[in-house]
Length: 245
Image 1: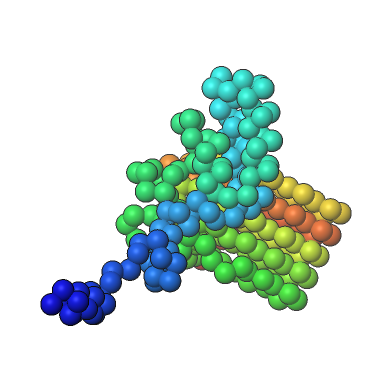
Image 2: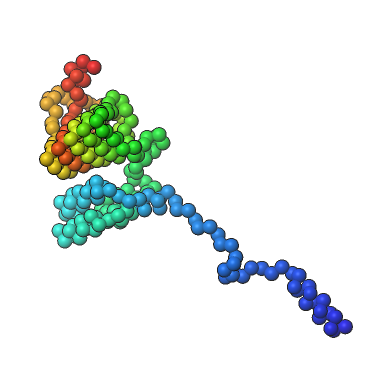
């Protein structure tokens, strides 16, 4: 009886399904977890305009005594070598004017009250033509303009501006680009004219500032003009001031 019993036991053990070894390479692996929105935001590649914006924040912090000259130089070198938004966040993490961390409760690229407001928009490309953005339009926070042998007008004086900071990057080649900002706007202009002109012109209007204008918006404008012209003007157009339109 011992022999047949042993044979039956062996057959029964062979018929019992065996569990896969967790280390078995043939076992199907769980798919990798997709990155979250915050992780994607930190991995986003940054532009020269964003690097320059952070460099300006560092200079402001040094002017307030928060950074020594040596620390400023070291961080500026890191800023200009940064490739992702996360790297820029890390550089300014210990400063009160540092970049916002996604979902950290500070201002982010997307306003909380309106999911329909675009953070970025398609590039405005003009060739032998013209484009205008005027009136009560809804601009993105970041706008890029490429104009060749054409005219572009961006008028923010009547635009709906949910953002505190607006970033505009302009390339003008044998073209004329006009950017009109609110009367009380703060403009940080970074220009690179090559046989061209990039200028910020004050409004000649001497009347009182609109009481309903709210706190000033900050415009970061980077302009490259090659045999072209980029003009930044303040306040409403003359026809608006005279109530002709």
